[in-house]
Length: 251
Image (tube, rainbow, N blue to C red; front, side, top):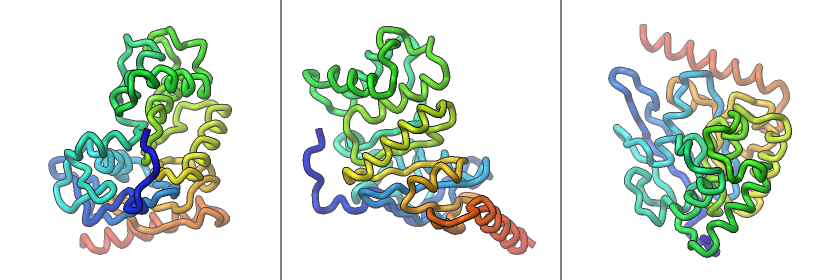
């Protein structure tokens, strides 16, 4: 539905000084980050590092307290419908338990601007690809957690987005689902789609990522080489150094 990408699409996401707090807790702190077209940018961090908050800021679901995040040069917060239609999001909680699987994916296609004449066909294609065909006429509430994750993926991809935001997309998937998601992400990047994904699984993101950013206390504190060895050790070295630096600064 998006046609050919425009010449100004090279940078899909640009965050500058991005900050968001909840009361006295700063979840994202003066953060700078870029995600380019055709890039798989992975975000890793401990629980509470701010990953989900950052994902929601990028998707335009939260308003920054300071700084900015832009999608193709347009502020994400209150972005126009034409910009939002170019995003596919897993992790936004858009699930209607009484809708059938087919209705839910079709609704997502229509919401993102797919014409009525093609929405159901695209929904059926995504449902089949993600092995949900036998559940197509069943309400979403009866699905297992793994199949609900597959449904979220189908809903996020049905409209052929230019930016895909995946917040812990493998959290409930079985091995077959993880392998299929890996294929999907690779195909998306090959087509020039920007992919921004958060995960706890360093070994998994290392298979896919162009860039791996380490988030700690709401800041990007380092990067990991996707082709590097012993990424877990490198990750904890970066996080421990950031924690030590923060503790020293607080004294």
